[in-house]
Image (cartoon, rainbow, N blue to C red; front, side):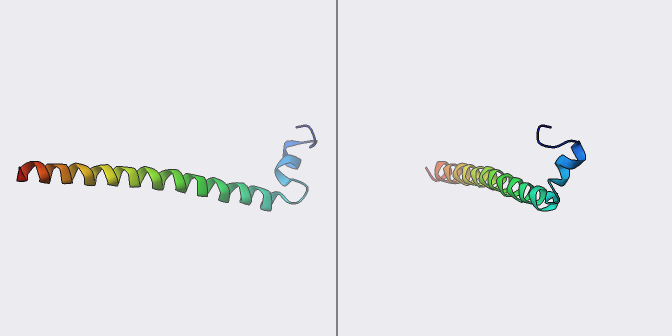
Length: 60
């Protein structure tokens, strides 16, 4: 592990493990939210565009 003697020491991060791993968890959660929200918005945009194209096709 380089700087740490054991895996438990690595997880504890010199008594700061809670803060370190919580920070990583929050950052991961924000990244995941951003990816999912963009994917959902993209899907919603294309579904709306398809519905609009069908409406315009029926009018013609």
